[in-house]
Image (tube, rainbow, N blue to C red):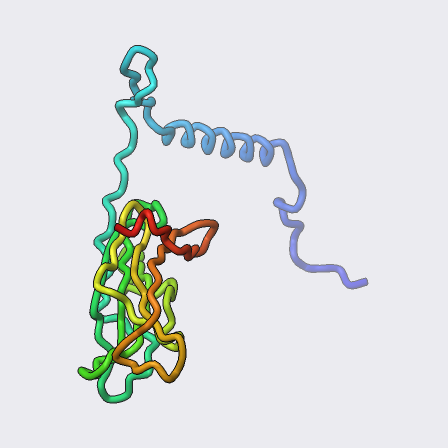
Length: 197
């Protein structure tokens, strides 16, 4: 065994002075923490039953509806590009900020190209993004000019074709449909005849 030439280090053996210094340091930390406590509550109650709170926090301002102009929609239109032909806005999920429903189709200038219907949303500071496809252009539906958003419900008339022999200019099928946000998805239902007026 080799004996070290270094003297014994004082801090390797706890002595009463070490315990006293530790206790003093802890007391100082607790005292400082007491200085940084929140101020007294300022809530006040009004009304006969005291149900309203005058000091309730203000709600955040809703974001503006997303603009579909800069969104890259998933349509294959080649050189003609895509065009937003209709849009409607409204709060679809109840968060206080409006979403945008956009009807988009290839900008052909001829015939009746199929439409896509997309729901756009955005977070603060972010660009608009597609969160749902309600009508896929591959299904060959076109959307009538009556697209609306009312009380969180999307309403539209869809026109389609019963077979490939029906000319693309003249759809022979019509459906009045609605979508509502329920349980994390948009639920599509057919609008009853009584509600179509």
